Length: 427
Image (cartoon, rainbow, N blue to C red; front, side, top):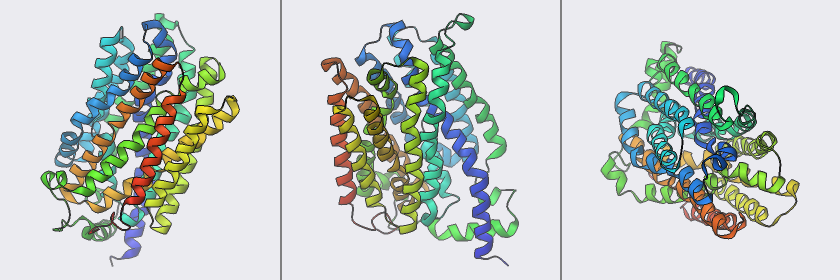
């Protein structure tokens, strides 16, 4: 007989089978997105890039991402998650590896832009895919477990990136060229693996029993029903004020997240004077703090059912961390402040993404999640470019970090301004 036990078993199987695999996919994706920060430790000197050029090139990824995000995510829903996610991974892996051929400003900007175009749709596709499997009440924790990949990419990728920089000269390639090549190709391999491993949804999951498939589909059915008060089409999404409020909130959060993330190795090097390998090791510390915070905050948000303070509180903590980094001169104290900043900004993500995933349905979910993510990720352009401009003008990271801290305070206030319960269907 179908029932709650069968649905619970199906969810447990989905958690064990899907989350670890999706986690690995996102680790590789995020590493290919941020490894330019480690490559810059050598590449900037080789190619003569100043702070402004690097900041613009690091951030221009998000312009390509923005322009192609919504159409990519709509194609994902039409063609199926398995096929489209595989396409995304193969193309971005090839372009990420091609970063090794950068020879000047023009090719740097072009390949970073194309990398954003290739990856467009991946993250919101993952969030949308989770809505196919996990009920709203359990989604923040599922999203947080998946999104800890952003932190783990730093924990694992930072030392690996530092080590790859150290093989400078092998085969006639600079260390930064080896970094792009070695870290880009796994995406191609994993993209092909997606075709064999990811089902399009519970109904096509061969590893669930018929009873488990029916029970999980039945449990998710009411949440997936398109109701009159939900945004169900792209046109409805574009005039939905809830979607735009979330997009603005996410924009500010992402400005802080990538403003620091894409400059982190250079901030650490400036504070410590360490060599490239040790910069990679030390840069992993803030990502460890971020991973712990993401899991704990996401779990507590699900347990209490509260979202606003679980976004605002970490945003305020992140702002405090950034403000302290701007003033501290002790490398150890500054590293602790960077860790607080990383923990705070990253911990907002699980509770935040439970909001749009809960209030949108059907095509509205695909379009709304993509729109929020694409507009929000323009912050990934603004943050690094802003830091580069301020650094170029002042010779210091302090001014840019204080601006980002102010933005996180504004994000916390904006999160609290949301009416309690407005993230739920019908809110």
